[in-house]
Image (tube, rainbow, N blue to C red; front, side, top):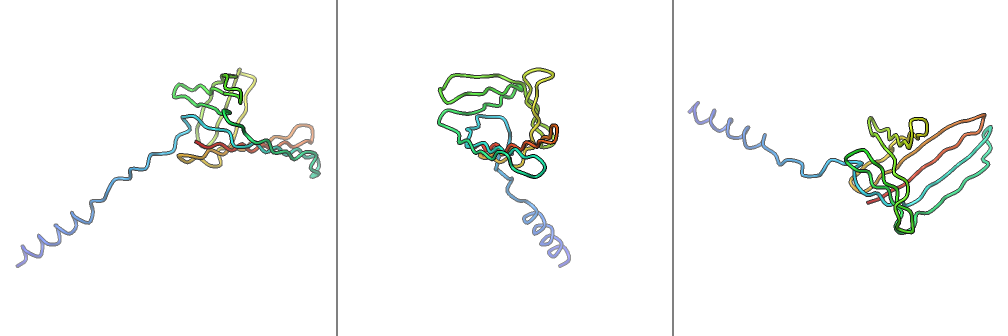
Length: 135
């Protein structure tokens, strides 16, 4: 009788401890991201000087490659600038030279959505930039 109970418990543990593996791919920045919009806000001493939204157009995208290149395509369909990028700890750094680079906070990264945010202050003028992409 003890063997039957022990066998039943072991069988139950084995059956219920096995679960399906998560088949949802882990979000990655690598891939072609279509530009949806950019939102700029420029302010000084709390007063908004500029608040502008620029909508992306058909054919505008950034392709982040596995090799660390960011290929920017403009609306005309021709390849524009190519930059290097690194992505770590929700920080995306895009650089076209050692002294010319931008650091973005990645606020959203899913399989079909990428949102970036940058905030800088220079001589009392604050510039904020939000960029929204989709696949």
